[in-house]
Length: 231
Ligand code: GLN
Image (cartoon, rainbow, N blue to C red; front, side):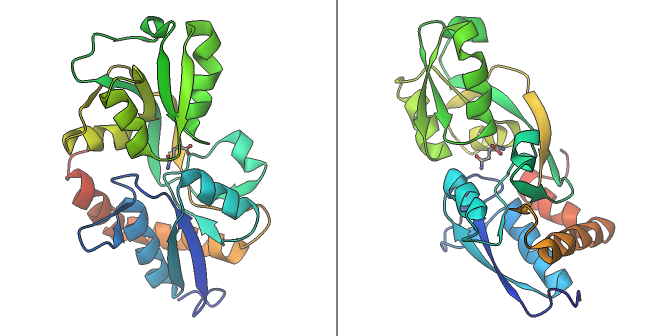
């Protein structure tokens, strides 16, 4: 147990639906790699968590304004975000891929000219799309959650979307009618975040717990539970 956090309860923001990292199961409990990891770390360090599924952008905003203590939401560690947040040690590798409808003939960015592309508010995928949209001549349509973004592509309103590779791969395996057509761009890591300079004990406890879980095999157990043993 960690004396700096033992017995305390922290409010932790997360996304509404970002499987395999966070999603509501059939019993309407939040599960997934982030959720299991957060709870296992809390147990390891002796603190408690209240999970708040606010949606990605809302969770980031709530953290910035100090309404919650931490955010774990498949949140990419970026230099820009480091101005406002302190991140834990990285806990999962990710990157941004482009996905299109199963039957689509679109294979590359150059085929997006004059088309609409769906992105998710406040995400690394949206930033990436916005950084290349003038070059490739497409327009973006924004959604607050991943499911609505996928649906816009499935129905054909948008021709493509940009999503994190592990999330898109998992979704497709689970039946989302999309396919991935590009290699991951903007490769980086997910981290747990606190507001810059605030909740440093919680951040240190997260890192200590993560280290313990990696050493005792629990981290691997959690990721394999959702992704299978081969990754
Ligand atoms: N990894 C992406 C980001 O940090 C997307 C996170 C998410 O949609 N939950 O911006």
